[in-house]
Image 1 (cartoon, rainbow over the protein chains, first blue to last red):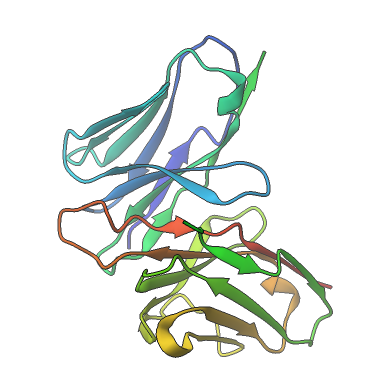
Image 2 (image 1 turned 30 degrees about the horizontal axis):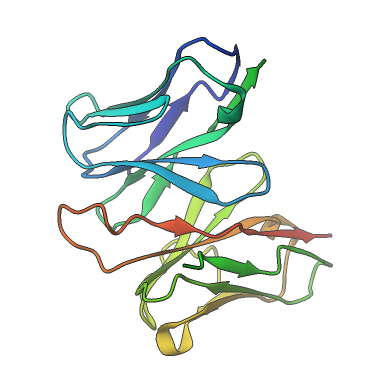
Length: 110
Length: 118
């Protein structure tokens, strides 16, 4: 059974700092997603990572995937307040279901 | 282009009552998914439609939950009778036809329906 662990679950940081959110999963998968959710809003797709070594960047966010280590990271560079949200990783299992991490609530203080 | 919409945004009902949630996917998306997040827990898969057919309903918690997608457009999720543990946020997502090695079948989510069973 595929399990997904995300950490930290809560992160409070100052603007301008860098930090990384980690997503570990237990069995082989071909796809990993990162989503962002603002309070009361939809889950917004940020990145989909399809292969080992995949790296994608959008603004101050960069996601990478190491399928051998079963690890994905979401790196935040020089954080700004607008990035405050809850971030989820989700891994696709063999039945195309998304198995979700618990989410990381990120608060960025001015 | 309109995104995934869900109705209602909130629903408060009493135990034993019936509630029907609706999801309108992005036009042209054959795949439609339902997920649920119970307070303090992870988001969990409920079921997956491909057009009007149930592709996978292994996540449905019990037979009090009934999902339909007549005509392959919008979908409904009915809970009858509702129990306290059914409270949570119900998300719907849709995606295009799956293509191997492509990311075009990313799932796009609606805002969710927050269900409270008292």
